[in-house]
Image 1 (cartoon, rainbow, N blue to C red):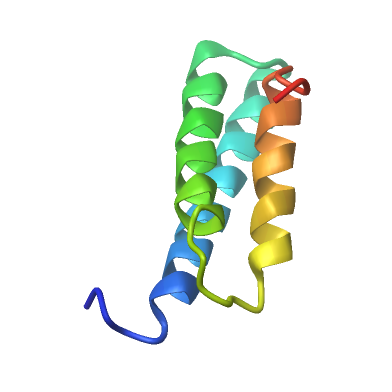
Image 2 (cartoon, rainbow, N blue to C red):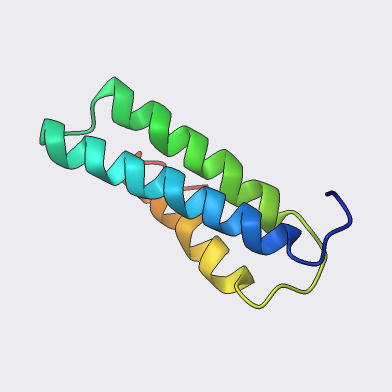
Amino acid sequence: YPESPLRLTVLFRYAENAYQVALGIEKRDNRLSDEAKKSFDEAQKRYESITSKEAEFERQHLARYGLAMCLFKKGEIDK
């Protein structure tokens, strides 16, 4: 449903889920393993799909924060 008014909310939850999975993998491995890095990459991609939209979204600031945390966790703080 590309025209749904709930589309951005669903995409946000989709990104949040990917981020939580990445955190779980990082905690399990006690380090930033390749698997955790891939998961943070996926979460980053999902957050970027929200932050690149021009639409008004009540959780846009949280999506930007999640994107920043993904970059921080991967050590890419200069982006």
